[in-house]
Image (cartoon, rainbow, N blue to C red; front, side):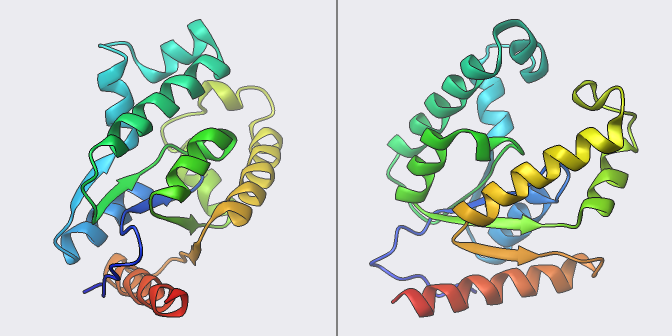
Length: 184
């Protein structure tokens, strides 16, 4: 169990590149620590009133999507409940306003997975539109750009290897507890 600290805002925000296991790890972490868990993409979908994230992004562009993403997170945080877990979309690192809001209201946890493993996970369902063309090269550029941002913003960095999920969950709990003890 996580040892909460009254002086910290104990909201836990799981971030990382697409298919890094943010939602899976957030759910396990929340369950192990008796917390409510939320998915950032699900919250955004509710605000889009039936339109998919992909179609909204295509129709209105990146800036409009980031505004919607920020408004959704702002709305989520207006409820001052603490000890909640939120998994974030893979591109949140591009939304500086949202990142700053999250960091002001909790702990940003970067689930770090190596590039090769992520690429394999992503292409299982077919090449997504944003990687069409030279998908490996496009992903390489995207990976490097986003990983650099996540490493800069994250309070806690947890490198996830091909370990069983239960082992990874224990590592995550231990790293978060260690971070909380070091901050106080």
